[in-house]
Length: 75
Image (cartoon, rainbow, N blue to C red; front, side):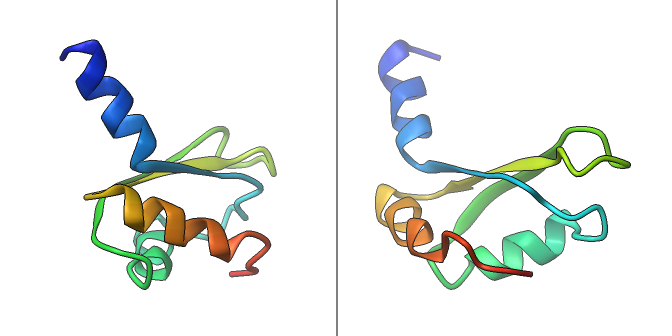
């Protein structure tokens, strides 16, 4: 992909930190559906550690901006 395409994907993606080991990608994607259409939801990190994080990609920047309002939400 071109650099412009990559930058566009980055603008549509939010980073989520401190994800509990019991939370699934499906649960996380469902939470963020209130912000916009989710293209991809990936939980990364050690599944047995508190150091889990995720990337949520939306179809547009509006969804990503809206998702920022969920900062601090407990699941």
